[in-house]
Image (cartoon, rainbow, N blue to C red; front, side, top):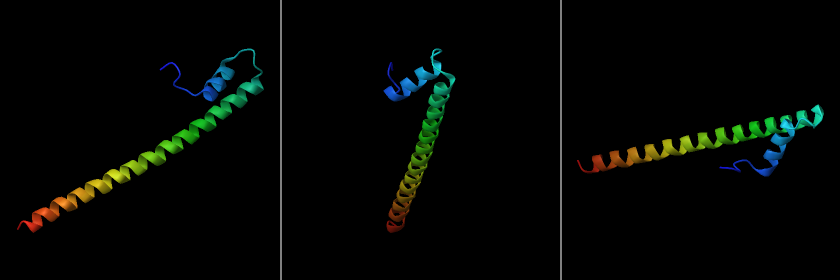
Length: 74
């Protein structure tokens, strides 16, 4: 798990921690990291909700299929 972040994110993180960088450059890097975090959170929430919807639909279809078999066997 040595390189679990991409090169771009690693450079931004290094810039924030670099004591030789100007504060303005550190602030820009930190602001970009924050923007990336918001974008990733948004992506995760969107795709997590879609997965929940898919699971719900699958469960409903399975339930309908089970009920249909019970009704046809009567």
